[in-house]
Amino acid sequence: MAEDCIFCKIVRGEIPSNKVYEDDELFAFNDIHPVAPVHFMLIPKLHIASLLEADDSHAALLGRMLTLAPRLAKEQGLDNGFRTVINTGPGGGQEVFHLHIHIIGGGHIPPMVR
Ligand code: AMP
Ligand code: ZN
Image (cartoon, rainbow, N blue to C red; front, side, top):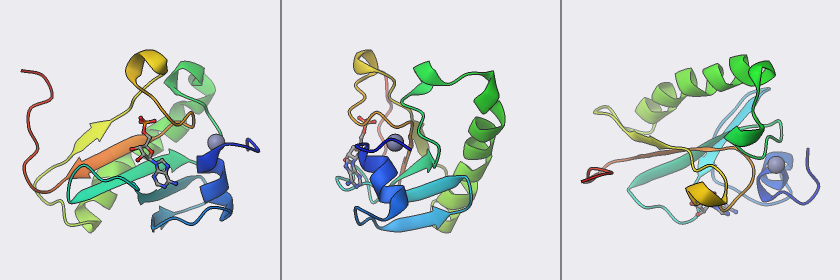
């Protein structure tokens, strides 16, 4: 847990969130500025700043995030697929330094790269 991290504060309930899912290791909540009809974040409760700080000891946790993502997406009504985004570091446009997967879908999702 990092004292001043906003996503750690969301996990602790110190900042309100629109929760989508919670278990002992993972937490998911809606993005406050959605870019599509469904846009939520899946995060580990463990504070890992970004993928740059992840190592082999986190492999099972990261695997759980990837296998949970489609289940939660379907529960949110995304039967036809979704986009996952992980911004990493300043060079990847990351703004909140607590590892998170954006899960985005519904409506028109344009190609990422043209
Ligand atoms: P990133 O650029 O990947 O670090 O994205 C950070 C995301 O966190 C942005 O999409 C923000 O809209 C979202 N965000 C920031 N603060 C909150 C919050 N308090 N509750 C929900 N989403 C948030
Ligand atoms: Zn954190």
